[in-house]
Image 1 (cartoon, rainbow, N blue to C red):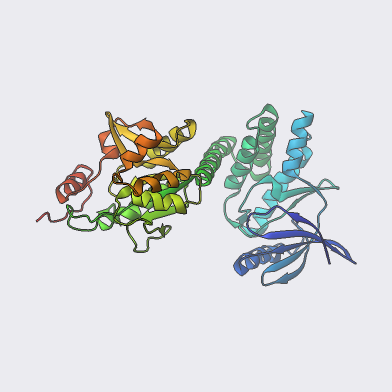
Image 2: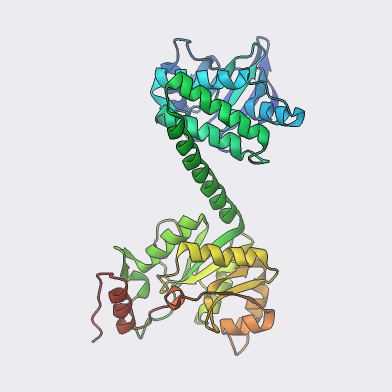
Length: 398
């Protein structure tokens, strides 16, 4: 067997190979469950009504498939854009394929990316990649495909909109979907795609740091474990950061396991918040770190987004929150390259975060709502914040 080409795949290894019998595709899975899920779809479609590659062999982590020569529908869309001319016949074939696939399996392709559809030399559409198929209505599938077409870069060009409108007409005609329902579903799916892209953008740009250190002497108990919305404060912060799309989340100063995070111990212990920031800058997997203290529960995902976008738009290495002229350096964005500067300060007498800001310079992101940046250091402050926000928790301040 000779490997001729490796295809792009986010989850698996996919190769075009050749032996004495001709060309074929080898798909190797990291998870046996994924291979089994895709094999199950091939079994459902074994009757041959829906055009898919022939399954040549199956192993626990591998499928051997027929090689279907042709162009992907993303390539077709790009070529039609360049030519400024649309042949609608392949797009009608796509609608027929999706309707028949849904009828035969009761499923929808898990990913309606047009690269998962090949137009062969006979003008037939062939679907590939079924490991993430799920139960779904043809309405949702139709909306997802139309949304993908409209948002494929460059977005919403006249040609792409004409293809989307044609698809919507054909889905209405073949599947009996009302035009209004499909237009609404397309708009909904566009929102989903845009949100997913936003999350990927933030995940690629930022790590996150939750500062949960300190002795909590004024609070009298560990602040990270205080309840908020039925979860601990540290879990609450993790959920908000995840909502923004950041996956590399570090916790400083609190060593108990927290789902979705990794604990980063201080390299310079007992140096306050800057010690935690410094250690996390050293450990960060991204070029910048969004930093927030564990006891600021009202700083929302939208405000996190505003702060990070302000940092991206500027040219400062540090961007911090500000309210009415008061800096909040424990809610900010710090470039990961600052670990050397932070380390130099930690070796001196003044180890405050403000000292780092003064040394490096910084930009600010103004927040008019005091509650956004408000923290709680004592039982009274925590109880007051809970009362004002109707959180039904209370600690004894004795």
